[in-house]
Amino acid sequence: MSGTNFENLRLELRRGCLVLAVLAELRVERYGYTLRKSLANHGIEIDEGTLYPLLRRLEGQGLLGSEWREEEKRQKRFYRLSPDGELILEQLLAEWQTLGLSISEILKETHDGSTRTLLTGS
Amino acid sequence: MEVLERYLQAVKPLLPRDQREDIFAELESDLRSQFEERASELGRSLTEAEQEELLKEVGHPLILAGRYQPNRGTLTFGRELIGAELFPFYQRVLTLLMGITGLFHIALLIVIGALGNPDPNPIGGLIVHLGVQFAIVTGLFAFIQHDLVKNPERYALHGKTPPRQPDSIRKARFEAVMQLIVLLAVFPWVHSVLWPTYVAFPPGRLGPIWHSSYGFVLALFLVDIAQSVFSIFRPDAARIRATVRLTLTASWIVLLGFILGAGNWVVLPHQSVTVRKAAEISSINHYVFYYGLIGTIVGASIQLLFDIAKLVRVSKQESVRLSGAR
Image (cartoon, rainbow over all chains, first blue to last red; front, side, top):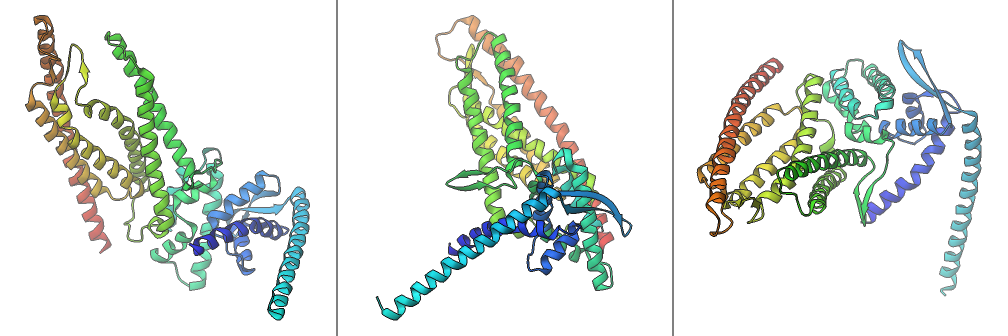
């Protein structure tokens, strides 16, 4: 049961981070496959079934632009962050950093509290 | 690349219509790049098993296509019964089924009304039918969803599937879906006619033979529904499908013969009827049911011949393919 709970919570946590990671990776133009590889190289594994619909959703929201172009004798669809996407990425990164700091603060306080409790025995 | 081709052809018809070609082209391009890179790493072309292993990571065609659907709702009663991937298909099947049932019901009411015996509670019957269909379709999809979460491997590609023409797979799957929809639409109506011990058929009532045959009819419907669901997920299993279809047709002929032998399909509601009413019942038995049943048995027998021919053809094709593979 706790395994299922962990998996659900992990997926929930990951979902938001994926958007941020994809937007950040697409500051440089890439097509689906190279984007997936690049994310994997940074430790973020994402399958095609999740990535491509996500790219379409972000494009639909105006955060990405895309164009079909031939590369290595094959038509490929290249994605890149749009001006709106750049703005949103900046805001999301700021939010991410604030959240990270807040969580660290909370953990630090809890850790100090636990240490105090252990030392005083009360 | 035949495995990839089959996979893409399985995904394509399930994609949203307005973006189908675009999504398909992108998936094809990226998956081919992935296959080529893997082949160049290995320094040889990929085996079928290796190709299928790569596609397993992409996901079952139904799940992959489901993620592209604009409607990403879920059905939840306490816990999630139908997830976002299956929900668009669930909604589509339910809408189509209920639409057909509604039209069928209206047509039936018009015919009954024109015959001079209007249904006193037309809406009640429709609501019961829709309720039964909703329960069956929801139960079916909830079962698939449960199984999908529990055994994702079962929904991966079938590694031992022999190569087939994509068109035949698409056709078989489409037929299975349509068959399932028709069965689910017709069954509640059959149930409402055969299950009650007393159904009026003015000026008489349906004889006990109809109620007695209900168990057999139910079994045949359930086998047919199971066969349709199986064919949706395994449209390549042509021989199994042809065998089950032949068995079902033969069983229907036996059942119809049993009903034909019973004779009194419409009986008198009570003893105190006029001679004229008794003559009407006798003429209904003779002209409507006797000839109707004979005609149906003849039709089913012709169908049986087609089923036998199909089973022989499919068996021959599979033998040729297997000997070719060896």
